[in-house]
Amino acid sequence: RGSSSFAERRRVAPKAPKPTMRAQTVTALLLLGCLAAGAAAAPFISINVDIGDRRAVLSLDSDEDPLEAVLGFVAREGLGEEVVGQLIAALNREAAALPAATAAPAVSFPVNVQGVRHQLDYYAGDVPEDTVRRFLLERGVGQDPALERYVASLAGEVRRTIAGLQGQPGAPVAPSTIATVSVELDGNLYPLDVHEGETAQAAATKFASDLRLGTDSIAVLTQAIQRKLNEAAADAAPQPLFTLPILIDNTQQMLAFYPGQDPTAVANRFCAETGVTDPVGCDSVRAALQARLNEAMKPATQVVSVLVGGVAYDLEYDPAVTNTAQLAAEFCRQQWEVMYAALVNDLGTTDVSQGDCTGIMADLLKQQVGGTINA
Image 1 (cartoon, rainbow, N blue to C red):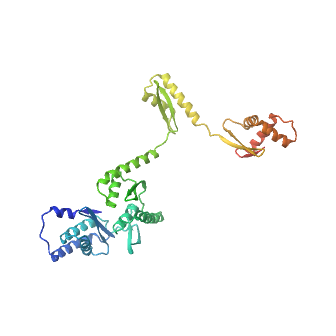
Image 2 (cartoon, rainbow, N blue to C red):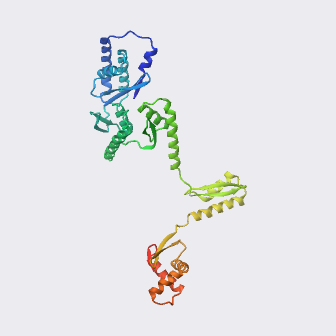
């Protein structure tokens, strides 16, 4: 989590006399006393070290000797022994920022990374994806094309474990994701998650740091995240029940009406905003709005299916204003030839009128409105 540009400082600072290994070791051991006291509860410590134009991660497991970790890092990265003290000091600062010794991980389980068993610890309040991604990056999985698949899998396991703890005292709650931006790097897509309470710039900075991108990428990422957040906000915004076009001084103005609003108040505000001062003109706006609202609030029509001679007919009607006799009469009028043939066949007589058809259909509709009626 910390960062130290030792290589850059070494290039510009006057060259100091090279300390002996003995003196250096004594200094390191003195500093380790502070580190051991401050990091007793830390399951893992890591710092980013900028070396020229690249970045390396110095990591320390809770059961690892700090001096050995630093010396091994220096040897692997080809650094001089003069930076050992600086690295130990950086680890000290990182240890001081870790949770207190009483803090315990909310979720912890072993994970095999490249054949080595490590303990993945998740602390309450952290974002599972961030915890897992940092865990994998610190263990050298950053260049693996399947990194994000591993992150999704392990973070899912963390979230499932958290969900299983809900209802228990002190159960952790993982921050929820409010937006995700897909970022393509070297042909691979990486999800950039924005979590509740997080700003676009904070999410971009964290993503750039986790994937070791240049600082110039933060502005581009921030813009992409903000666009995504704006889209999400627009989708979540309430939608009008309807918009009513009204002509004001030969210019069309749109009056938006939202569910739950008072039509009179909406019309009055519209008149004030569009400069309609004539009482008659504003009365017309109120009347038009009320008429449109009445139309919008009309009950939805219903449909009943009628089978006549094996053919289905859908009768659409408004239950608030249509009775079965009206519906039956209208259907018999429109489909008289079909109904006549069906009734002649059923009744065995040609003496059938539209009135007979209406009476029979009305009785059937009363029995099963909204269902399927056989005639």
